[in-house]
Length: 430
Ligand code: PSV
Ligand code: MN
Image (cartoon, rainbow, N blue to C red; front, top):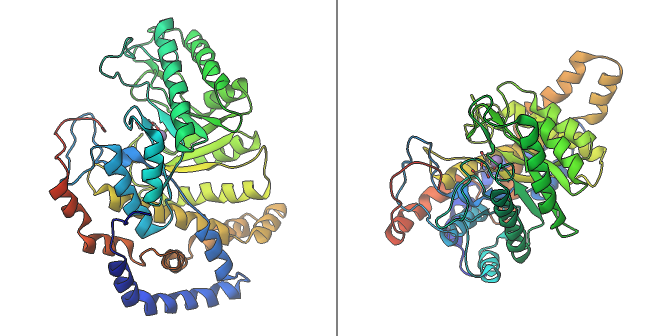
């Protein structure tokens, strides 16, 4: 392994300063959980086995269609992004994989890129295709859609790009292709709503046919944006119907931001699982629409309820239940490394809290129609502060007890500001 970005001595020094307090908190929580018949070390072992992928595109400061406000030391290519992802993994120990996006992360040698990542302690997760944006020199524009475009040559170009992503992913060690298309309309009558879905399905089937046996195609739905009147795969209904039509390797990906406000996302998760179609997540949070805010920053309870459904699904697996967990956020006003450290911790906390739910008590209360006690079974777990479990697991894995503190002390970003070229102003997330 090459040298990791943060000094081991710094992490060790800070951990030494925090260790006694952590042991105290861990012991107190252990006693509390023991009274409820829960072995804290068993929960810690589950937490140690949990991981969530970070998006390569999340390493840069995001932006909106209005503006982007870059920070000094921001990464501008996949190599620098990997280095930043390595910092997140080194300190937080829950993000060992990166989900790349093409052509944003295009290089000439993917074998070398895989080795470069491995040397930083990272692997690759799902590859994401991009047919929502034109690239310099591209033969056919995506202005009127990609997989669902009227124009057959445009559809074929979008299919070919997805097949190229599979090929890249094979070299990187991925086994999932995430397909999100921006295809849709801004005016009633602009396109035929039925026929555009037909075109999407026909093109998606060509991609599906190119999937290796052990691969999955994750269909990501989104209600609106960039199309503001209709979107071809707008909701989980369209997504599951498409996945069912494509075949068993096609699954649905739930991006938490891609629903109407107040939609019951945990129920969508349970439904998709019921039909063996839950393929993965893009974690983020939202208040109004696809705001791409930090996971759990607005509605941590919803995130907990999603993990509660996942814990139920684990007890009742269907069709090789194995969802991918990925973050997909746009960090407009924070240092992306700090946001992803904090988000990965929040996601893991929700996972740990779901693991604390007394399932026997919950199921008994449900059977007895005892609504209050069923709710209390969830409430008790949600109200438990699991931070010491995560910090202990992190420390034992070589990470930092207080990851944000260690990151700030390392002055990583200001060191990178000396080395990296500045990002230009402008709008958009890349
Ligand atoms: C679309 O909003 C999305 O959630 C998809 O996952 C894209 O790949 C990603 O954001 C970046 O644009
Ligand atoms: Mn997404």
